[in-house]
Length: 557
Ligand SMILES: [Zn+2]
Ligand SMILES: [Zn+2]
Image 1 (cartoon, helix red, strand yellow):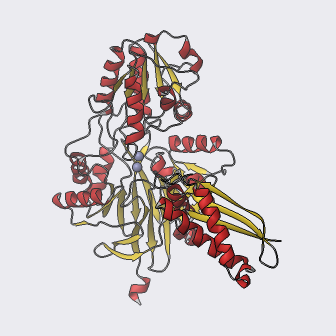
Image 2 (cartoon, rainbow, N blue to C red):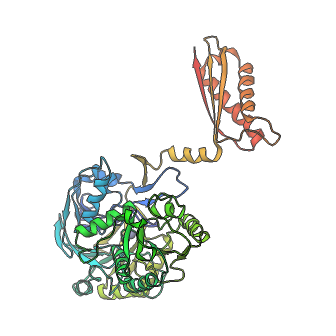
Image 3 (cartoon, protein in one colour):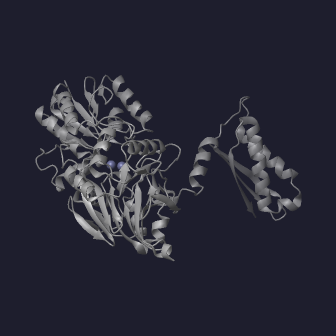
């Protein structure tokens, strides 16, 4: 009886643990059966070539939909896509109040406005460092340095203890824009007592400390100053501090900034609206690029990840209507190549180099720093906060394990590695995984959100490997062929090694199989379809060495 009614505080990740991206965490307080929940972040991950036609992957929110009545709020830590990119698609199923700081709210609104048909989403704007109550949770924001304005950690106070959800953070005493990580508040949290820290594992295997945004700004200033001709800088559009550093470098070198790419324009607009660019010079319209002298301009471009439709790829292929580069110009990748994007990025870099354009990356110059803490920074934070429990999140298995090992060497009593869907009871008693909640993933496919378990993408992948043979024919009531069967190949070679036409091979297989089918079976379209499918795939495989998909349409006339 007592166990049934005993109150407990739990944490469960529904995305972002054991994988990169699509962060979604929930915290629950209540009895074993009924709890009030808050959700933190609702992000996407970007799909690779293994998911043809899919742009983004999102967490499956089935569990939150079930628990919707008990879900009291969704708090956003910051406006990176891996933390807020799924809101437009998934929020309508939850209808839960959203809480965010001004920049995050403004960027969400700008995104919504740029997507026709996107839902109206009410957001409660919370000031930096603000404190508010959601059901039994008392939530206070802690400003943390990161690579986008207004990244927040959350101090979540409950009757059973206080949790620090770090969000994405680093320690940068000179972040250029916005406040540094609020050490004072974090030390005070440690003094008052912190039960658990749920923390960023991204750079858990890197020793030392991340360099500061200020160091990057210095390097950029020097590279712009010494550039003989045009300069193009590409970076993550959301890194407003970096955009500002480029603007400052431009001003110092008496150059004008031209912004190229929609995502970049949107961020610049939001940065101006929210006051982050109050003392930044006006940028020039893209039309100005053509008539500004080469040593008087900087193109600030999207496309640092090699995205084929983004500004830099189009410029590199000389297909941009307004912006061109030529021999002697300098392109600076003020970015890191996200794993999986190496090939498209290398393609762009090689294309530029072949044209005699100088390319500068973080391999040789300090033109980028990570927004995540290295081990030295984690050591500092854990020293301030002194949590009893550490739960590594925001990383793949390797990062989580490394983070947990580090926490243990720092004397943290419990470090718990978990996976998506694991429910950890943080209090009362020792922290442990006590339950599992439904979790998974879904895809954005065109305008639709589809279940990752659905066959569509698997079919698409198969289609990509083996192509399809399409067969159409008409049979009369007696099962006799009417007219000629129609055979089409898509993605199947036209001829075999001997030069035989594969379309004809498939055609012959259709006709021969029909002739051999007993009359009774010929009157059953399903049975005909099955027999033809088998015969066509086998006949083509004998000549090709691969079995295509086969679609058979039997029309009864
Ligand atoms: Zn982030
Ligand atoms: Zn993140």
